[in-house]
Image 1 (cartoon, rainbow, N blue to C red):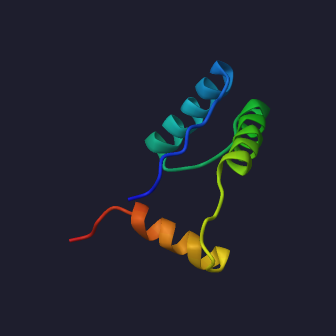
Image 2: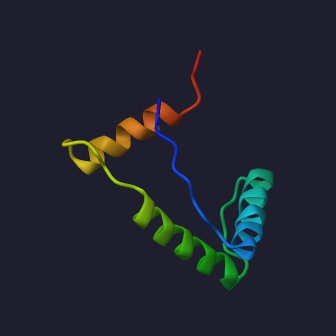
Image 3: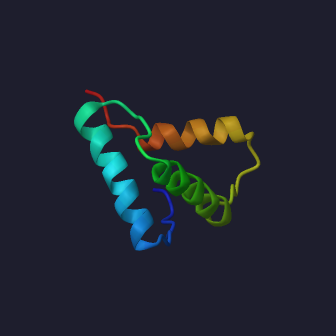
Length: 76
C-alpha cells in the first residue's frame, strides 16, 4: 500500500485542473485549451517536487515503474 500525500492547491488551480481532467475523461484527448491550464500544471509539478521523496535506493526509473504497476487497474 502506498503512503498518502497531501497536496494544497488554490481554489482556482483546483477548478482549472478539474476541468482539464474532466475534459480528458470525456474525450480521451489531453490538450491545453487555456494558458491557465498550463500554469496550473506547472504549479502542481512544483507542489509534487516539494511533497514527494523517493525513500528507496533503487533507480528512479525502476522506482517509478513499481509505482505505476501498483496504481494500474487489475487485469483479469
